[in-house]
Structure formats: structure tokens, C-alpha cells
Image (tube, rainbow, N blue to C red; front, side, top):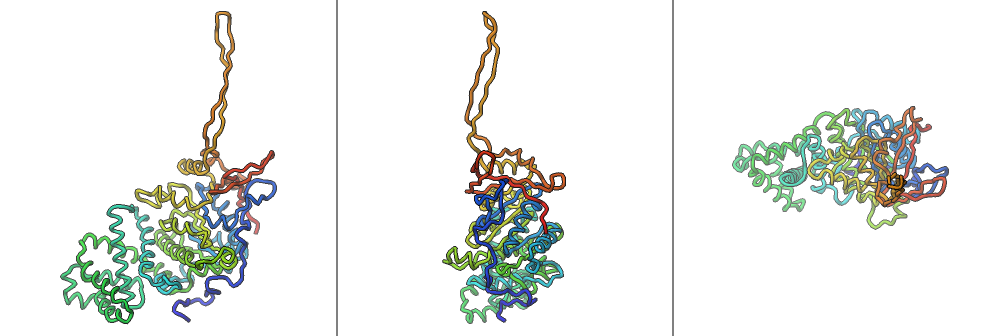
Length: 519
């Protein structure tokens, strides 16, 4: 077995090199959903894989039926189409819902559920160091992996980001990580959280200490510097070694104590939770599965719900999501044409209910190229302010709206949040409408009374869908005959709504999703 082979269990080893041996998924133009209230299916209203590649955002208040309505319909559509995927979990019962849907669609054997006590483990640093691809083992990729998790940790702790001194702290932290990782790889030909932790916590805290023999004799950091020096010539990385050595023996000791304290505690507070208990067992031990398994049809469910595991579940899922996104982005060979891509590369999906727990700044970049990497993103959340809070910082609104702008299909369910409802109405847009008025008035004249009539009109711009309409959509349940109303908007799309008189093109469509499915 090569150095990247899975260690266990053998039943989860991939069937091929990231591409399925035989195609068993639909064409990009085949319908996953048939939308609209028409009496007959209309091809103009089919929602296909090519639409899914452009991303989906589902909004709906608590109890609106977003998960059991449009969410369930999309999930079953992906399962029936034999897509591989990654499922992030926030609620305790999500894994049960996916198990039921997988059983109903014949996909039970494709589930790969990552949870405490299961045989599935993902050593993320070993994966990133040894994975296929020319970028494997690059220090900056490992640094960015850490930073994606730290971003989630900072949001959880209510820290703001962006601009000013924050940018300085980020650069300094990345410098610390970069030199820690380089030293570990140069000296050990491997990288692990314990080794990084020991390097950082035994580094010199002053120039005097760096030159002191007592520190040199007891420091793991210094021992690795000596080991790396002997190996640097063999690896032809002398320049890298010199930069790393000078950082640890000259630059780092001369940092202001406050700066050093902040960046060290930022790293150690995150690393500490990954080096013990649940996260150590799942993400710092063996490598028994990898993101590329979804390219062969596996559905990886991270059953570490945030409602149960709190920030541990959030950190772990954000980390794996980032690794999975990067794997998806590099899987399509450069220069491959659309027909060959459609025939040989299985579509995959990323699914996150309560997505405010998992969204980060990289999502907008990922979604901007998701179509070419044949990936479908589906995020579900209650309202727009939850994203503002998730992104945080002075630019939270613009960051959230930039991200949402890359998710072309918006599905709106019942919502009581005015910010979301006004934004939804604005997204669908306004149209020029004629308003007419008229009246009668009685006037007294010398010769007797008279009746005056007046009439007029004006052109005004009004919302195609008024914000208040989103507050009155049906939410399912027995009182609504298990029917969930939705209003669907897709950028650049002209839907045909079937009416009695004629077909009228519009940029949104109303659809009713059933909450109950057979099977």
C-alpha cells in the first residue's frame, strides 16, 4: 500500500481514483424537481443538476417546514440521482432523517457516518500532507486549514474580525503556524498537532533565553531545529530552513510579550480541544476515510450535532468541510470539456441545515467555481440576521450578501423576520404597475347642488411579492394537510406559471412541497 492508503477499515477503501467506474447519475439537464402549480409538468419549470450546481439557499422560520418540505425534496432528489455528498449536522435527529431517506432511495450502503464509537477516523494533518495532487504537503495549505477552524472559533467566542489590528494578528498567527509546520516537516517528515504544540510552547521567549544552554538542552523546539539543519541539505530546502531557524531564534523571541501571548493562546486554545477526547480520536489518530470517497458515491454524514457537541462539533465540521471543498475544487482535470465531465465525474453535494453554524469566508470563493467542479451547495437557515451574526465584524452584512449572491436559487418559506422578508421581496424585485383612483363630490352652487366626478391614475413601482406574503405561507402539519408553501427565485431564470388564461413568464414561482413521502 502507498503512503496515502487508508489504514482501516478496508471496506471503506475507494472503488477507484476519484471517478466512478460506471456512470449512474442523470444528465445535467434532467429534472430533479418539477416545480409550479401547473396541471402538467412544464420543461420550463424543471429544476435540474445544472441549477443545483449554482447553489441553493433555503430561508424559513422555525416550524416553517423548510427542512421537511423543500429540504427533504432536494435531499431525496440528490439521493435518487446517486450523488455523493457531505452532510453537516446541527440537530440531534438529522442523522435519523438521512438514514430514513437513504433507506427509501436504496442508498443505505453508501452512508458513511462519522460519530463517536464508529470506525471512521480522519487524521486531517496526515491527509493534507500526503494527499494526491501537486499541492500536497504545501505549508500554506496547512496554514489555511488551521485558519478556517480558527475563524469558526473566533465567531463562537464573539470576536469581531476584519481590518486594522485584526489583520496584523492574522498575519502574525499565520507566520507562527507557517514556521511551526515547516520545522516539523523538515525535522520529522511529518506533522501532527502534538508536535506543533510542543514546538510553540517550548520556543524561546527572549533573545537571552534563545542563547542560553539550559533552554537549548530542554527545548523540543531547539532539538528539532538541530535535527532539521542536518536534513535540510538532503531535502534541498536550505533556504526554507534558514528562514525557519531565524524566526524561532531571532524574530519570535523579540516579539512584544503581548503579541506573543495572543498568537500563542489563539493556537493552543484551538489545538488543545483537538488533542483530547472526541476530536483526538476522530481527527488526530488514523486515516480510514477521505473526502474523495464522496466522488465514488459515498455520503459522509458528520454526526457531531452542534446542539449536542457545541463548539467541538462546530470546529470539527468546519474543518472537514474546508478540506472537502478543497478536494472538490481540484478534482476536475484542467481542459476537460463539458460532455466528458458530465459523463465521467459524479456530481456531489454539500448539505448544511442550520447553516449559520458552518458558514465562513471561504464559502463564497468555493461557490463561485462550484459549477465547474460539479458541486451542489444547499444551505438552510431561519433568517438573514443569523448570517450577519455568523460572519461578524464591520462588514458582516456585505460579506453575507456577497455569499448569498453566489447561491442562485432562493427558496422562501414562512418567515416572521421583517429583515428577511424585505430582503426576499427586494431579491425578487419590483415591477411598474398602474394605480387608478376616482371619486365623487357634491358641491353647492347658487342655482342648486351639483355632483362633480374625478378620476386619474399613475404608474408606480411595487414589489412583485409583498413582504407580508412571506408571513402567510402554509407551514405544513395536519392543519395544512401536510403541505408546505414556498416562493422560489432563481437569478436569470424565467419561470412559466400556468394560469387559466395563458402562460405568463415571471422571475419567481410558487410551489407546494409535501411533507410526507411514500417509502
